[in-house]
Image 1 (cartoon, rainbow, N blue to C red):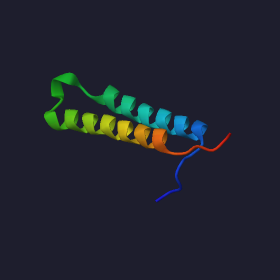
Image 2: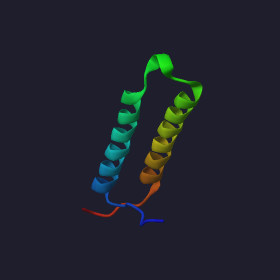
Image 3: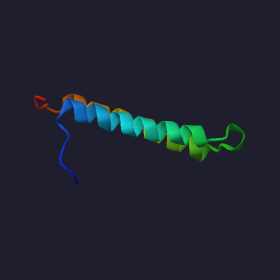
Length: 64
């Protein structure tokens, strides 16, 4: 496991990267060919983002 991110700027950068990955996945989905498993994966990605955000909110931060 890596070191915890406690710097607010790094936390924001991390979340931006994860959101960009989510948007890329969303852009590749073709609605007429989408299956329930695809939607489940998207929901899991959103849940992971929410969990990470909660971790960042509860983590003590360093001064920049």
